[in-house]
Structures are given as structure tokens and as C-alpha cells.
Image 1 (tube, one colour):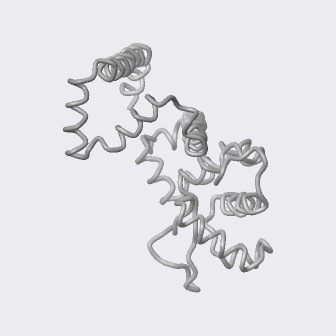
Image 2 (cartoon, rainbow, N blue to C red; image 1 turned 90 degrees about the vertical axis):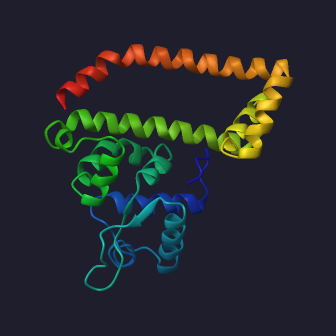
Length: 221
């Protein structure tokens, strides 16, 4: 989903279909969307195919339903992708959490991201709040990435080089060249040192600020 200020007709319809999939915590088949929700057949199949390709929805359950139709449900990435593009969807986020955490497939995805099964059952308000926080932060990060993809020159040349370097960090040849540049170029070395020093300082600050909260959460587990 493209987080544009003005959504295209295609994105508006995609948002509508995603909301229909999300609305009651029950996976939807193409049949459900076409015949129960009165959506055009070609439109539903086009958007379902695109949402699967973009990892916004997946097939829920190991088997098809009794008629052989595939039931689709949201991925966490799908929720992040549509968060903020529609006021109603954004407003209903906690309600979606309450509905979908009862679904085994969705709950597994939540646990994988650090949500605790017991807390979701006995402390839903705390989990609800953290779900919104996590989705909100992830959506902001995705939006920042989208802006960078649309206009890479919003970053300085040094910033572009650093991000590009991170993307090829596991390349053996690139690592060798990186080490040679670090030794040869003082400005390059100073830029690298400055970044990692700032990252280390922030990491230390982050650990100090969250130490008591982490201890409290781990004690309650």
C-alpha cells in the first residue's frame, strides 16, 4: 500500500477490501468478498492477488474450507501498511487486535513478535496498547523508507553511501574494499566512527532508560 496524501482509486478500493477482511476477526474467502460483501469479482481477484504478492494477507489455516475456497487473513505487515491511510481503520486498531488475537494463525504471528500468550489472555489492555505502539512505530519507519525510495536525494551523499554499504555488508569483496577505504580515507573513517559512536551512545541511553521497565516485565513473566 502506497501511503500517499491523496489515495488513488485503486488504493481506496484496496483499503476497502482489506477492511472487509479485517472487520470481524474471521478470515474471508474470495466468495465471501464477492457474494456476501457485494464486491466485483474481477476487482476482488485483482486485489487479492496483489495483497498476497505484497505479503499483506496470507491463507489462514492448513486446509481450504469445505468448498475448496481459500480463507485469507491479515499479516502484521498488512496492518502496518494500511495503518494511517484510513481514519476508520486506524481508530479501530485496538478492536482489530481483540478480534484477531483469538485466531490461532494471527496469534502465532503476535507471539513471534514478542507478545506473550498469557498476557494477551489476562492483561489484554497492556497488550492492546503495545500493539498500537508497535504498529504506529513500524508504520512511521515504513513511511520514512517510502519517502527515501521516492526521493533518495533527501539523504546526503554520505547517508546514501552508508545505507548502501549496510545493504552489501555481507558481501565478502565489499567488506574488503570497506576496510581498505576505512584505512585510507580520514574523512571516510571519521564519518564511520561518528555514526557508530552516536549509535553506541543511543544504545547505552536506551538500555539505561528501559532497564527498570525490562526488569519489571521479565519479573512478571
